[in-house]
Amino acid sequence: MADRYFPPMKTWAEIQKAHDTLATIVLNPDLRDEIVHSDWVDQVVASLDVLCWVLGHANTRFPDALSGVEEKLRDLGYVMKELPGEVAH
Image (tube, rainbow, N blue to C red; front, side, top):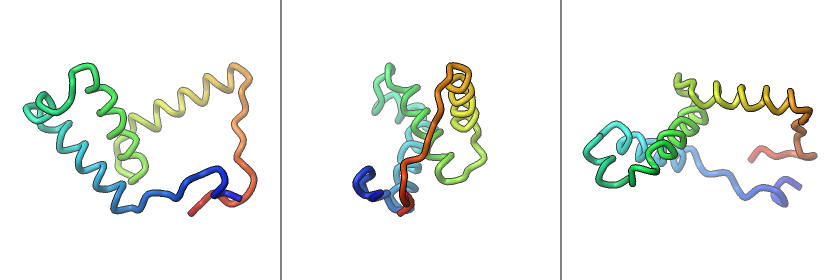
């Protein structure tokens, strides 16, 4: 049932590679300026924050932001529900 809703998960190696690629760009200002348009830097950093969260790093920016969003949604009356069936791959 889960495959109906979700494509296969990326492998740990693919996630780590994406993290390392973005970290290289974010942590090297000269490279960042060459590769990332200035309007996209915040999105690249946010993407790196999410990958850090997925990989279990100590970076707390994404989980802190997610917690704030979840709280606001609850305050507005939204309830998040899990899809039925097994979703882990």
